[in-house]
Image (cartoon, rainbow, N blue to C red; front, side, top):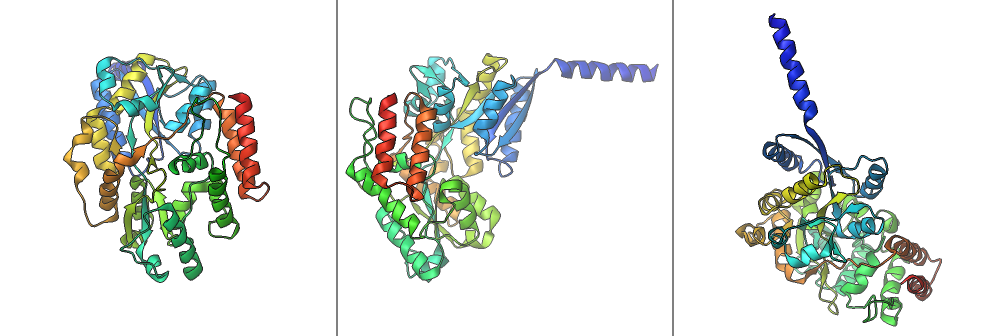
Length: 409
């Protein structure tokens, strides 16, 4: 009889578990550093929603888009997915996201510009999560060996390039690894104050003399060996690895990734200092991509999925996440006023937080929205790679891109 009662209890428990809604949410490159915070969010959401079994899945940045499209195609998408603003543009272009319906009160939780970044033709494609203006982590030992003053890091792109030449010439280490792969040259144009479209917004114009000159600068440096060979293939991932190994003088990074340096190589972290991102004086703006949460196409319970996205990006949870990462900033109005963001310190992580907080006034998400984005982005990427590899001249590459874009726009 006792055995029967135990068996019955187990069956009842199994049935109750089976009746629960199974949900997943995906993030980008947060494991293992932020496992505790993500698991806390899972436990809290399940507590507030006892009928839900929630699973967190972390995905590398290089795999998130392909994995999401495959999950949608198979009919098994996550309930909510963490995407950067440029990824949201591509996913919307491919019809891979469900529009969200927010009340006025929910909208007012976020900064209008932040929510606007995820809004297309009046449709909300996601809710903003965190962002962090780029900073420069630099190795003071390498600076000294190159004859540079660690107390005077570069403050403009022009002086950063000059410092990179000096580091390579005198130490053999690379000075920095620029973010020029994929669509990042479009960002550099905008940070330099150069237009991408004409005033009507319907015609691409980024093949002017100043655009050509800027692209040529990076082509020349790449050709002469001042940038690593895999700059175009591996971008930020390779730069972080190179810096952590003590072979890169300066790392352009979001301050949250300085934690990875500490985790990978404490000796390099200990000689790391942090400076503001060297702006291009003509633009005086720092491209600061927003991270957000979207609801993928085919999510089984859209209302519950949206509830999860709003929970993950609430005032309380954004502030908690920022305190754990120590270097990211909320996109919600209330959380952003917390005194935590004005606290400095001696180590690189604390320096990164304080430096980034002072640069927020220059931060803008420069992600562009245009029709047929996936195809046009490939045209841009392929031609820039051809220019960097020496297969095309700078003007020819930009002329070819603009011609293809304007034929579509």
